[in-house]
Amino acid sequence: MSDVRSECASAVTQPDSLYAGVGLGVAHHFIARRFKDLVQVLPQRRAMRAYWLVTHEDTRALGRIRAVAEHLAKAVARDRAMFLSPQPVNARSVGDETIQRSLGARRSPG
Image (tube, rainbow, N blue to C red):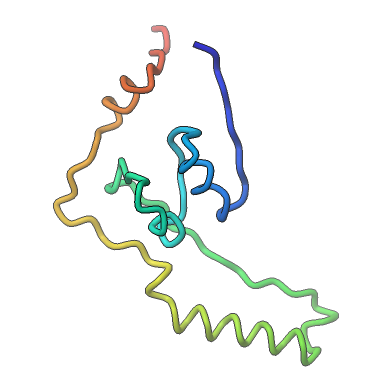
């Protein structure tokens, strides 16, 4: 078995890669849930992320920059629930050991 890796820094294309069968991966719930065939294998494991809106101090006061920043802040506040994944309720999932066995993971020596 060869070691094959796939890396993707785009939150938008990560679910596309998973859907295409690249393997196991991490994807934002609010994006991945659009792919009905993707299976969440570890619902008890969660990663919280923070998003920052960054502007250059020289352009921050410009009307067009301020307008976009205000629009984004309002849209995210309005749609906040969309970005939150549901809490697992009595979630039944595949355990780490089972996943490692099914992927043929090698045990480390020692």
